[in-house]
Image (cartoon, rainbow, N blue to C red; front, side):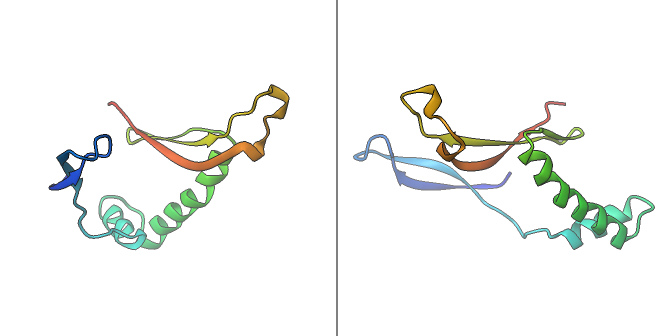
Amino acid sequence: MKYSITKRINPLKRDEVKFYATADYGDEIDIRMLAEEISKSCTLTVPDVVAVIESLLDKMPLYLKNSNKVRLGNFGIFKLSFSAEGQEKMEDVSAKDIKNLRVLFTPSTH
């Protein structure tokens, strides 16, 4: 991962300046470019690979919304997480308390 060094005010101690590593990103790779590269290493055509990728992107949110974890081989696991507001009584907790839905990715360790 490429990074640069940025000087910023420490968010915990506003009178202190610290240096932080900041991610540097290259060009964005779109589905078509990814499909072209994948097609070079297998027997699938570019349109076939695009169809598979688009199908994966179509189905993945459905599984995540159903509380499944989605493991993509040795790449890692995707799952949904969220923040929720607390209630004084258990019976007052509802889906309305759920805020900030986000997708978490955990890279595979092998």
